[in-house]
Amino acid sequence: MQHEVCLLPMNTSGGNEMVNGSLWHEIHSRFKLKETRKSIARSLGLDVRTVRKVLKQSEPAPYHRTGNRRGQTCTLTFGI
Image 1: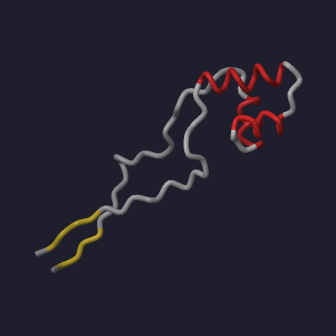
Image 2: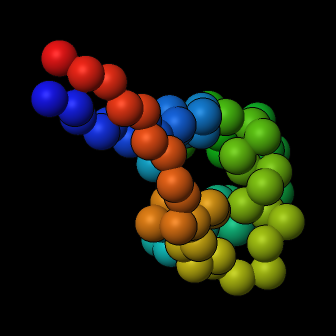
């Protein structure tokens, strides 16, 4: 009897969640009030690099999934 198993790659993202619209507005509002990037990151529990990335965006970025998992073909065949 043979079984086919598809092994998908692990998520390599370091973050737990993406930044939602309200958080995007909070970061931009605080920065306009002359709060430092480091202070914003510390108070919101974010990495400074995340705050920098959000501040580079002119508007909240919609979620885009990278890669095409449905189109991937990966087959591992083994017999029992």
